[in-house]
Amino acid sequence: MSSISIIGTGNMARTIGARATAGGNTVEIMGRDRSKAADLAKALGGGATTGEWGTTPAGDIVIVALSYDGVVPAVAHYGDALAGKVIVDISNPFNSTFDGLAHREETSIAQEAAKAAPAGASVVKAFNTVFRHVLEKGQPDVFIAGDDLQAKARVREFIESLGLRPLDVGGLNMAHWLEGAGVVTVGLANHGVGNWNFALGITELPV
Amino acid sequence: MSSISIIGTGNMARTIGARATAGGNTVEIMGRDRSKAADLAKALGGGATTGEWGTTPAGDIVIVALSYDGVVPAVAHYGDALAGKVIVDISNPFNSTFDGLAHREETSIAQEAAKAAPAGASVVKAFNTVFRHVLEKGQPDVFIAGDDLQAKARVREFIESLGLRPLDVGGLNMAHWLEGAGVVTVGLANHGVGNWNFALGITELPV
Image (tube, rainbow over the protein chains, first blue to last red):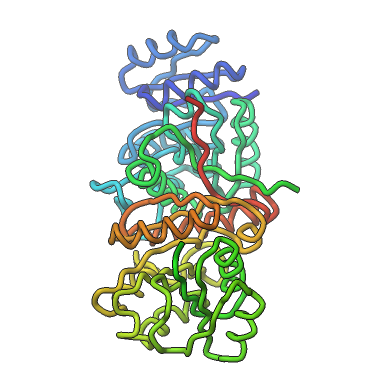
């Protein structure tokens, strides 16, 4: 089991927090608004606690569940409080028409967060290809990317505790293409599938 | 049923050609080396014919099954011979380390092929996320992208004739992100899955 801190009190924080407590993990919620964080921790149950925004998270794995443009500022604000932590970026930096990324350069929020993170912290991209309500009700594959194998192993273990399958796509530079896979997912919802009740994943050939 | 011309005589030409004839489509093979094209047409059976490189393809749908750096030159070489055709780009412009695209700009081979194509031709991106041997033996989802709805409808019909599920991700600009999904697929093969016996696709939530 893992010890998780979630920065954020929105829908993804709630959904990941609920699966995390159900999976037997220790969960701490950190919000700019302490009372919102306390409300969410109470709603989650399972011994979830509240931490103070900007201070050292209790969890070894810190999931930043903010809108994409809040991730790098939050990591920078926390600064050395994140030393030694595994930081998980779940964001989708969609452009305004949802058919591309907000950054035109070949980067990702995860890579930018890694630049802002203190020494000894590692960033892993995960969960961005999964719609929230599919994460609530389904068993989606969870793609992950990161440079630190030990950090990825810990995120894999956490994902498995949720009853989900982690699928490693490679180094942190692959976070750019996972963000692109997020774009493909929304494209499918708007065109080829016509609903949001699905997840991108893999199907293996029968042996 | 569709009338298909395949430009190329390599492995993907063979694999798509075999599924196409099995699906009852009319197939023409066009190769720079006419004898190789004739050999492939003969091997495919099902009435497959051979066309002369650079002349008007017999098929309404023209699948360019060349290595990625040969696609735009071939479309330019065919020129007006492709007027009115639906051109299908299946290529993966991987970089030398297979963790990114060969072009750093936010474009795609499909978009560049569209610029080189004559008036009245339409380009659709398809099949690039499917490994050849999975296309031989499996039932992978086939992601497609294109701006011309009528052209996409014809490619959908063709894909369905192969017993496969076409999934539309949107306009031709999405070809860039489908090429990125190709990068994710190879990343999964090299890291998270550890074999090549799978395809990217979608899993829908049970209702």
